[in-house]
Image 1 (cartoon, rainbow, N blue to C red):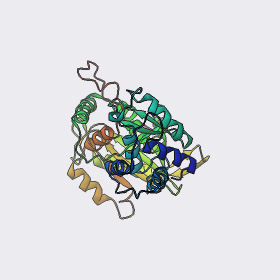
Image 2 (cartoon, rainbow, N blue to C red; image 1 turned 90 degrees about the vertical axis):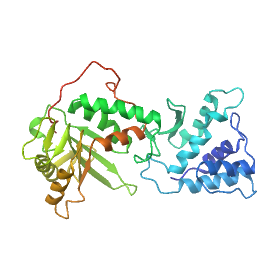
Image 3 (cartoon, rainbow, N blue to C red; image 1 turned 45 degrees about the vertical axis):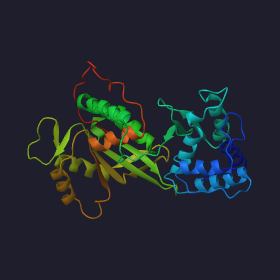
Image 4 (cartoon, rainbow, N blue to C red; image 1 turned 120 degrees about the vertical axis):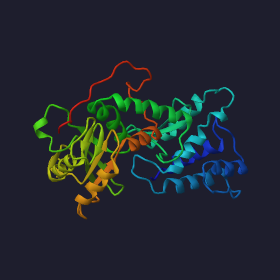
Length: 328
């Protein structure tokens, strides 16, 4: 990410506290600010705003997944700037500070806001995706564990359609995928093993195509599928159909092949099922097929701070019926 010098200078002034409604920081407090952001920068005594602008330029030059996802360090800086504990007189809710910060951010295609927990977040305006420091394997807070329990209860009662529409589509959009298309039930004859297809743009601007095969329940390797579970051999056949069949990309006005496939289960993918399908894949396809089970979905959905589906409410009386496969 490369910002204009004018915007770097103005954001540096905000961090230094040279702008109304922001905490004033002398040399030692600037060093402390970057320490709080897990950055080892130590102010050298030079002009504060110029030194901070240079550090911001370094941070924005760090590797990041895509143009819609800034470096993790920059997200931490924005959150520290918007810390509600630094509210100034005349701005108790920091709405004025937020407005002043957004004047700078909007010029670069970003917008800051406070989430329901009062934590500063950063949204990419063009894609409407929220930038997150998302590690699904980190320890979760009590609030996150409560949301995870509510989402688990929703998984137990939702249909396959609802799993796709309410969980998978918002999740993959948030993770940076675009042109996400769910097949729906109307074109069942054209499924070809795909429930969803989508695109992902690499930092090099190369585009990869992904297909998703979704099953509501557990995937196992049993010879006869039990209620609420599906046989992995059936999924293997559907994934092969997915990888071998072209999809039409209306943005390019041509047909393209799916590069990678996700097998997504709303329940557990058993160890036996993983081993079976792993043995079936040759070396070339082994990197093409990836697995996500319930735990993966729950952790990713919670740490990316997405709103829970409407049905994920405690003591809900509505229990949808299990749906069929969603065709392409």
